Image (cartoon, rainbow, N blue to C red; front, side):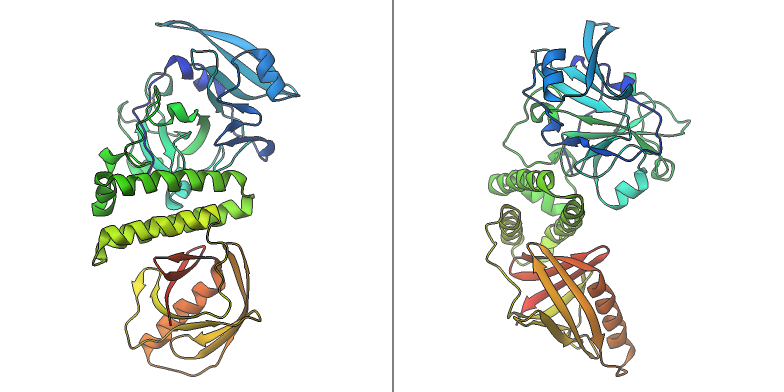
Length: 397
């Protein structure tokens, strides 16, 4: 979850609604990429004037425009490259950049989603935080914070005949698409008007879901770990390649699911704290000495489903790049290669013995998931292998 707020036009964001462009079959340009720091060379510290903006992004022209509102006249800059409109920059009222907005499919996004992406796909991938109905300049639209960072807002547009000020049903907004991306400096990311309190976690406790998020909100230590993880995760995404970001996001979604299952533990608080410490260590590189070489594991869960004691799934990682074990019924063997948090398992083979239905079903699920594994991590002492639609959990033997 990401902290969000009922979105209304403010001086720092005026003019942003004018940045929407028709979606086109244009690939995003990595030279124009939103990140946690801003867009290109434009950051929260950039002066809000044409000269400073031009220095920050050579080759891009900035044209000043003004907009009249009830609060007075507000200036914003339109950025163009080769005559094409790319994004809009608004000020914070104190001489610095206060927001950047784009409706151009040419602008890339460090988190992945770009203009034209559908709501249902981003929602399924858990890339959306809290959503709110738009107001004033954004009336009839829906605004959702990115789940990974409250500094990025996705504006969704689509058809709906319902009343303003209400979110459309999920079945309606499933087909809505991103029409605009908005970036705001960290000092505005929590409330849109002032720096957020550092006492709580990175998500909105008023919208906490389940006993574990409620526990984090009530515990200063866990809230601090959540903020530390949020920062480490954002920094990792910002420096990762496109392929690495996909892996990071897949694991983060799996990690959140595992964290929220700590209610099943005999000591939920200890479980949550250990998971945060492990994940922070993984993202900051402080566990770089960990390796799979020479380790042996017993499977405990497939996609969150606990394996019964009668079904044996094991993994033995040799130091020469080979892995083997039992898959529920048969013996299997494969090769593996580890690079940081990534792991590649290939050339999977197995014996062909037939077993009762429960063992065969578990074996099919295990081998199917194993083929899709592309990452690994340690969670509270357990090994987790994960990938697209795959998650396997093991305890050390």
